Length: 163
Length: 114
Image (cartoon, rainbow over all chains, first blue to last red; front, side, top):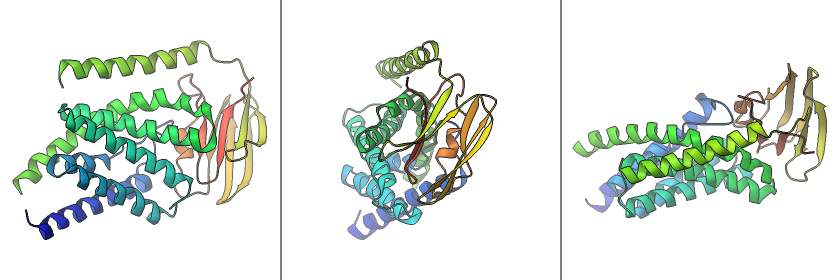
C-alpha cells in the first residue's frame, strides 16, 4: 500500500471513530450506572486488524482529542478521563494482538481496560476512592458490550478486507 | 474464544459478581445521601433518601438537579455537554448504590459513608 493510500485509510478510520463517538454520546444515552456501548472501539479493533500499532495509537488519539474538542471538553477533566480510558484500552488491544488472542477476547479486554482507565483517572484526579464501586458493574457490562463490538468489528473486517 | 480465554473472562465476571454481592449483602443501613464538590470534597447538601424532594444547584455549566422519590434519587435536567450523570439512573438500582458523577460540573452524589 502506498503512503497516500495508507494515510487516506487512517484519516477515514479516524473520522469514523470521531463520528461514532459523537453520535453515541449525543443520541445513545447510557443504559444505567453510566454504561455505554463503546461503539467507537469497533474502529480501534478494525485498525489493529488491518494496520499497525502506530496507526491504532494515531486513530485512538485523534478520536479522543478531536472528539473532546468538538464536544467542548478539551483539556478539562472529562478529556483526561476519556484519554486514560482510550490509552488503557489501546494498550490492552496491542497486548492481546501481540499474544495472538481471539478477536472477541481482545474486544472484551479492551472494553474492560477502557472502564478501568476511566475509573482510575477519576480516583487519581479527585481522590474519590468510592468511585471504584462502579468498576465491577462496568466490568460486567464491558463483557457484554465487548462481545457486541467484537462481533460488529469482525463482520466489518470481513467486508472491508474485500475492498 | 479459546478455553483459557473463557476461563479468564468467567473469573473476571465472578470477581465482579462477588464484589456486587458483598456490596448488596453488607450495604450500610443509611438513609442519607450527599451532594459533594468533586474538586474540594465540600458537602453541598445532605438529604434524606426517604423524603421526596427536588433540589437545585448552581454549577459551572448552569444548573444541576437532584430528584428524590420513593427512597430513590437521581440526577436530572443537568446543564452539561454530555449528560452522563443523568444516565446513572435512579439509586439504588437493583439494590446497589454507586456514586453518580458529573465530571463537567464537578459534582458527585453518593450515599453517606458513616
